[in-house]
Image 1 (cartoon, rainbow, N blue to C red):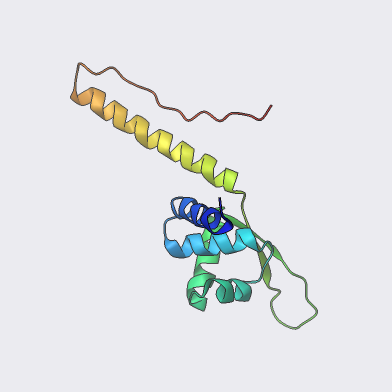
Image 2: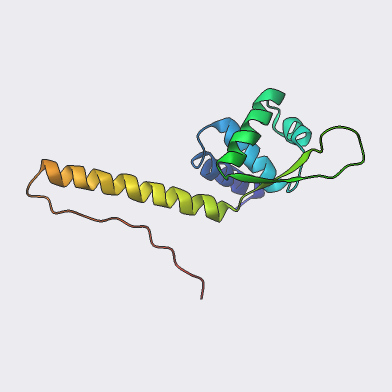
Length: 129
């Protein structure tokens, strides 16, 4: 698989985990450039500065990214360094959401059709041996 194809596959997979394309662009940038300032995210994603700052705050509050204060000697607020949360964490969260939604659907289906038996769906994670 070529690096370009691998990047496209990663981008597609990440887009499916986020609410918007802008969020996924910010996350991908942070995944590739660990520990960056908001100005670097703005330049790297080519998104509007206010969009990036708003997304960084929202994504941090939803635990999609983390941040750490950077201590500087300059006057004013100390900026944050931003980091992507592990993709595995995001995949586990998405799996739990899918489980809940699919199980709600199976309950609804069994309530609608008395001939259908209830089904429980879960996504199994294999641990590395």
